[in-house]
Length: 321
Image (cartoon, rainbow, N blue to C red):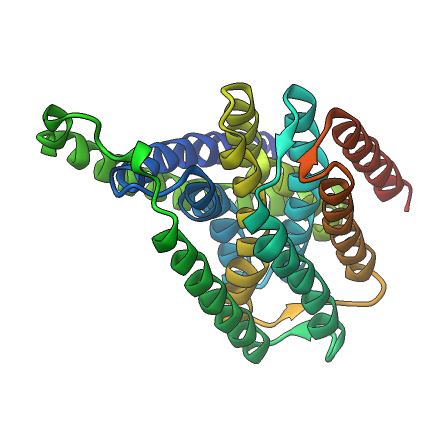
């Protein structure tokens, strides 16, 4: 065994630690700033928290694309989207049934379904996600954010505004929130770099394909912020943040993460390797939609159990294939 493998393992562990803690700092800081603006918990989950917890995927996929490890980029996006719904929402729904807001039924879930289909069609057309596909993703992302912020302006939540004059006189608190936001992003970028390097070297040493590493170690590692955020939010009764975090994060992963990464380097997307994973990601989004509608706008514990069983079945098949 190559003695250097222990260094690569250390890089993966250190990278994951930086990603998780960096995302934690980012979410705390950015959510603190957002709440002072009176934004509702659902919109915070769909934007600030979703972006913060998607930052690891963005850092890893962009770093992978720069180094030409395109299988890692695509596997990371698809694997994270699968884990976000089947594992994270599954666990969160078991902790506490999760209401699905009417705005999510009307806008966010349909957008996620369209994005999940689009990445398959564009990926198969030319066997890669090219720079023009990235432009399409980013254009849809801008349009989605426009509708999201339009709804946010219509539904400002007064409960999230400072409740006393004393709280309005704390500029230091705002400064701390901004500091945590910047520090979190720096940690996420550094963690993403370390994780990509370590995972790539381990894959080479063990003869494991980049696709499997991307779908397992990297995807689960970069999904840890979503897992921690959503489970904690569900336990505390902040169910809008828990659901919004996952929906927003999955949409961000396709439109922003895959979009930016494909601008840097064409992302290979083959019928033999990536199609199954992309179809599973689409099926997970469909399962979420069906469970939300069947549960009358609520993800109940039965839905959570079904998601977890589906996740375990997918991973079992993944290692047999």
